[in-house]
Amino acid sequence: MAEDQASPAQEEISTRRKSRVSTPPDIDTLKRIVGESVPDLADKTYSRIRSGGTDNSIYRVGDGHALRVARRHEAIPSLAYREPVAMRSLKDLPLETPKLVANGLTDAPEEWPWLVCSWLEGESAEASGHVLTETDARRLALFLLDLQGQRRDFAAEPNIDNHWRGCALAQRDEPTRGAITDVAEDFDAIALAAIWKAALDTSACPEQDRTWIHGDLHAANLLIKDGALSGVIDWGLSGLGDPASDYMAGFTLFEGAAQDTFWKASGITESVWRRARGWALSTSVIAYAFYRGTKTPIEKRSRKLLDDLSFSV
Image (cartoon, rainbow, N blue to C red; front, side, top):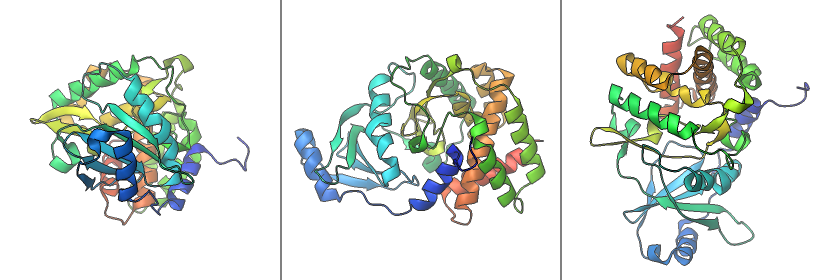
């Protein structure tokens, strides 16, 4: 890579820093356009959903639908392509996923994308405080196996709009090492650097082993119903990539017996496990360096993971 060419993760950090301002269409415009496209939703109530996400604004429309609208320009490609393609393409998965109802653009000249999908009942694992169990671990492992078996014809390549999820870990080397240095006052930087080196030293994902990935498996995107894992939402970072980027969920979501169950049910190789640990470290340390001091859920999640990794070496 040329010295003056930004790496994917560097672009991700730069984009986040430039994208704090939210500029979606106003709700009256959205209600009019959605009502014209889906007449059955014209008279429904639109309720803004509080979310810690940075990419999309979400509204519950009536009882059975959700409206998603990009909050920043960099998130537009995901909402315009990644999410609708995933909702159309992925079939017969063992956990519930949103189904596409309609999507389109607001009026010119803005032409801002919007998407309506089915609303899934349940509460996120994060909001409910649900501690994921061994049963949940088996369910998620089987879900990932089925996801990886889906036809990948229309799955989009890693790019800036999905924060380069699924790319080769080597592409994240410089910013990951930089973030480790930045947070050295809070964590054991030597231990984190050793974990990162081990991930880079393992074999890379072969082209033929790349699969559909969700790209954003954290507690806010897992639905809990009747006390158990029931669904997976928010497919904005999905696409084609190294499945290890989804298997980092083994480090970020599970502990103790549930974590052991997840690894056993997944049946992954040692090299995939090492890459998954590298993904968990890279995404968490970059996020923590960016969100440090904000007291947001993502800062809390990142801190816990980095604490766990620091003491695991």
